[in-house]
Image (cartoon, rainbow, N blue to C red; front, side, top):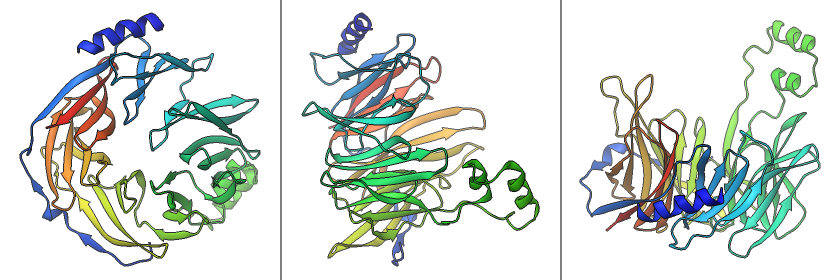
Length: 387
């Protein structure tokens, strides 16, 4: 792997309950790009079995070889440092290593006996801790710092659960849910949760609380035919009190602005995305208004959707992906920017039918875009400059 990386790098060097107002997307305007855009490929990984897994806003990339060995490389520096950060010993199709939402920490999932634990590594201070839980597998986390961590636990006999560690104190149960993300200010966090506290028949059967025969009998009785799992989406404070609900059908993507008062949201049942504006007063939080960007319409039976709406550091722009697809394949994926407040939007670059895996802002005028070829599955990292 090391020799491959050296060759690769040489080539790369060249190459709520509150009322709110909804802002209509009819107030948006398609514009020509108001500045020069330049871009370059800064890192390419086209060796068989070797792919770029993730990229951070600081230019660190996680490269895996056959999903066994994982390497950390700084793609923005002329002198690259290759570091073997993890080896699974066996090939794994599961996600084993990724960056925290603030891009400072590496989260490494590994086995300890029969359970999964999570190692959290500080890429700046070169220190780490391990998060484990006696109720089951620690499968994900959101990290403010090594003393303030949200993490998710899954077991075979209960719903997924979210726990909170603050100021290095023992973990506290937050809610049953599968999503967690700190606000940048560390005062509150997002998590989904189950609205129905009572387990469904399907869940009771899954968790071994009902036999298969008992579950079938319960369903055949007709009493539970309309039973379904209802998911809510909330923002909590560090005392684990829910401050407000986010009224969406299914949140697939959520990105906090750096001021912690704006959130971009991708809803599964919307082709566009939303911006939620928050108001904070005396440690209380409410929704000021909501803006829905949904300007792209279907043409000639092509399906258009937007995803990965990501805030610039100064909270003035949202970068997002516009994907044009037909019933069989991707026609085009392109990178766009929406100006917050003015709601002007413009295309930055088309990547053809390549898959855009991640968008990261380096600063207010530079972005990193990680793509994967739809033909040979090779991965490539582009640096885009807004002059």
